[in-house]
Length: 228
Image (cartoon, rainbow, N blue to C red; front, top):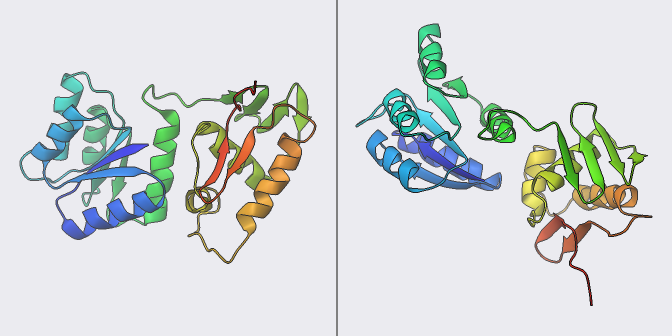
């Protein structure tokens, strides 16, 4: 997932960029509205995080330009202004969310994940499927080959992450931040234990086995290539 931050306050911009990169996102940073507009026009981003008060173009003007040009990329506004009128203006221009400064990074990360789950269509997927493995987000149910699988809340969250990003190798640090909301500690084996339990429920007794360990890198859920 690729995120563009447009923030003219250097400390805030660097803080957000570092935090989002540690959470597993690819991040670009622009320090004024015109530079942000140019990057948003030239590259394909999954989310824009825009400060409202920017030099060159303010965040509202930047978003208005993009929407007029047909860009549907989701947008999260950041602002020190807590007036209802300001929040309404941003949402009417086509923003997806509005976060008032000061804010905690945990709250920003939660909002980023929510927006990205909805995607460009603005409609959040209610079911995921890889091969014969199905995950129902509304009823919180998992089945494989039509057989119901009982998971704990953490196992469900872990499987959801793997299925949303199937085919992508996920490092342990990303899994730790997105499932446990913690920084990865190499001395703990919580991820390995959870993955072993999830495999026992999802893969044992089924073919093909979907959850793979990539040595030295992390884990991936994918349909393996057939062997000749």
